[in-house]
Image (cartoon, rainbow, N blue to C red; front, side, top):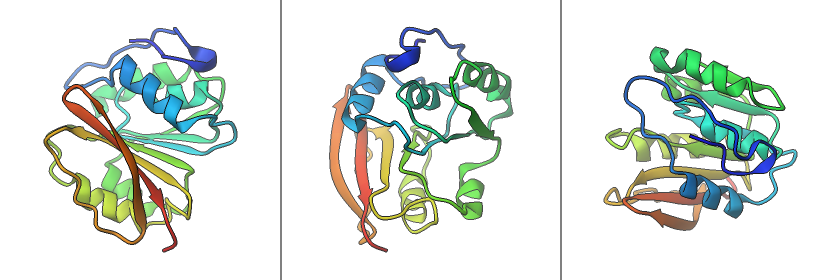
Length: 178
C-alpha cells in the first residue's frame, strides 16, 4: 500500500495483520482531492487500521492529526507507519465510541472508516455530530458499503455529497449550527 499524494506521495506503508480492509488508492486520492488543501486543518482518523488515512492527511498539510484504533494487533504497524509523517500523528488506542464520549476538542475534518459489518455506524455519526468533536463547518466523512443507506436525519449535519467507489461509498457531511 502506498500514500497516494502530497509530500509523502508514493511512500510504501506496512499492512497490519488481522482483519483489515485497506482504503483503495483511487478512493483515497479522490477523497483527498475533494477535501482540497488541508494546510493547518485538524484531522481525526477513526478506525485507523494501518494509519494510511492519517498519513494522507499529513502528506497534504493537516496538523494536528489524531488516529484512533482499538485493535491491539494493529498497534505496532500503526505506530511504524505514522513515524513516516512530517508532523506528529497522535495515536489513541481505544474504542472509537469511548474516544467520542471523552472528546473535548473539535476537528476540521473527521474520517470515519468502520468495518463494513459494524452495525452502529449511523448511531456513531449522530453521536459525533452533537459532540465537541464538531463545530460549525467541520466535515465528517464516512466510508460505508454501497448497500448501507445513510440514516442521519439531524439538524446538526448537512449531507454535502457522496462518492461511489465500486461497492463502497464515502458520504460527506458538514456540521451546521448545533
